[in-house]
Every structure is written in structure tokens, then in C-alpha cells.
Length: 185
Image 1 (spheres, rainbow, N blue to C red):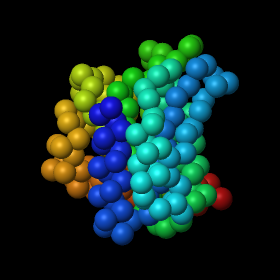
Image 2: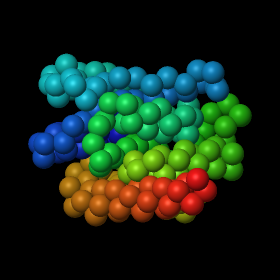
Image 3: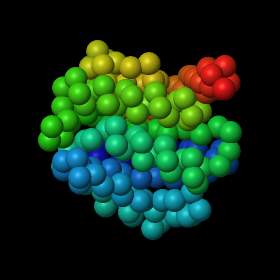
């Protein structure tokens, strides 16, 4: 419930500022059953139908976080044209699935985030309404911008600096990767 409410608040806020917005959900049940659920594509209006689809999402199954981050990054690269792209992940902060838990799941999520930032995609991870502590979030999200938020009402005062940090980190990583690739060529 908290993630759905936060997703609606964020989508409306970003849309109101003239940004292109897409919203997706995800869940998994093992390596071969990772599902990415379209709520709103970039080209779709943010209307009652999009809000109804968002409201219909229910928590369930598992969280193969790395796969969801990679798929979200691919959507941003293919449909989210523009130099400033931001992937916001709303999650309890636990990378967990069958055979995908503990250090393995955490490392895969961190790697997926690092891959996205190297391609210039800002990554912001929010744990809304969950009791996840910051140490656990750091283990999963590494150096990506992340925060634990008690209620979606708290997003307004926190989101600006988090977005700036996420986009700045992505730009720094993208430039670093470009320089390394240029030297190797």
C-alpha cells in the first residue's frame, strides 16, 4: 500500500513539473519468472485508468531486484529519450527470491544499479513504510541514492536532494565510463 501511494505521489509530482513519466511494477517467483507490470508507459496519459492500474497492484511473490532494475533501465534507454533519465525503485529494500537472497541478491542489485549509472541513468531507491534500517539499505543499494521514508507524505521534503544526488552520481559514472572506454580504444 505505501509503495502504491508513493508511486502515485511521485508520478503526479514529476508529471506536474513537465517530466515524462512511466510507472511499472514487478515481482518474481524464481529466476525464470520475473514479471514487469506496465502501469503507465511514457506515451500514456496519467489519467484515471493509469491510477486504477496502479491501485490494482498488490504486494506478493518475491523481489528479484537486480532483474527489475535492469528491465527498468532498458525501458528508460529505449523509451525515455533525453539526457537526464531517472529510475526510481520503490521497494522494501530486500533483494529476495528463490536462490536469490543474502549477499548474492544484494550484490546483484548493487551491480544492476552500477550498470545503470554507468549508462547515465540516475537511480533512486526508496523504502516507503517498511521497517528496513539504513544499514540493510546500504548493503543492497550501495552508493546509489536511497532513503527510508515512513510515509509518502514525507516524500515532498526529501525528494529534491535525492533526485539531484541520483542524477549527479549517474552523470559522474557515465563520464568516468566514457573516459575509460576512450582510453581503451
